[in-house]
Image (tube, rainbow, N blue to C red; front, side, top):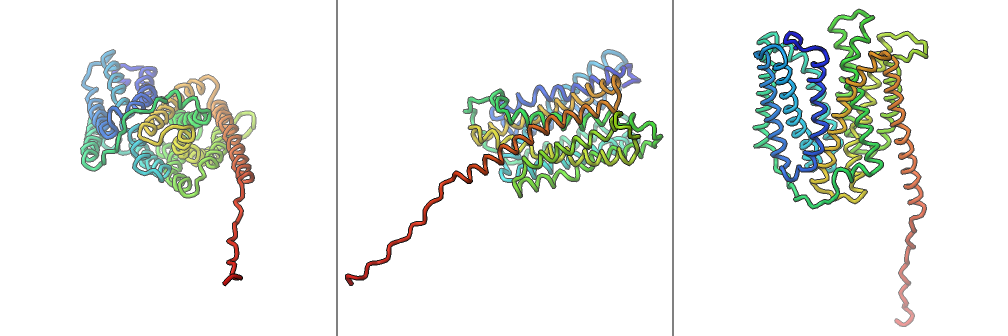
Length: 395
């Protein structure tokens, strides 16, 4: 991109606009999923993403200057719409297909997504060495195209009920707990996305090789990827989503707090402390993020929303929109904050945000526990009725 005359700001815009477009389009696609058709949305989203990936590989043929920047921006926007389509529909289809195993499915989806993010740079670099700039994008587009074709034959068509629910996306946001869960998703995505562009500079003083720097990144993303299915299993097996979110929120405070660490503690940063904090953060983000989709679905049903595909679509769209906003906010605002006040203070502020999320989660957990306990005490005890003894005196 720099060889084509793009400055750092333009490069940041091209990468950041992807999450911004997803933030805008995910709730729209979720709301109208029943009209469009969930299977059609999933397959068409894959095809759009495949086509734009291949097109991106041919951008190097354009002239240097505004044309290169404009086409890069346009292709990324269209690609984001395709990505929003198949991701939003995938969560809704999963909720419909596996109603009793939603958290487990989300954990598995996050594991494979994490594997893709982890292996992507290495595989892409290898393909670049073998065939130049175009080959990684062509291979990625071809794989997505094959996935779309296979989905057409293998994916069952869910029953997309007609839109009968008058409660839309704004009705969801009027539920206080939904707002809290959305905030939790935003903070999780923000934390993960913040680490990507800023951690390498934080490690500069250790003079690490590129391989070791890459391994440091794996501590957070790798642990998150490995533990995601475990959280899903625990939620579906023991119905512990609220408690797990509290655990994750509190743990995230410590993880983000000690990545710096904060200047006022007077502790020198070390590779061990940073690696340990990244491990803690990876565990924490998984424990906080994985239960949120299940918790959102349970909450909207408790508040009178019907248990149908339209509700799944709305929740999935809101869920993806929140994650995309965090993915946009983390590297942009977080990167600006690092330049302004430094990495250590920025991570301290993010730890404070996690703490502000943890407090209402703890309060909600406590109130819910008291209500359940009170309900058990006030539940009337049915008397045991004994049948009268048979009167055999007249026999």
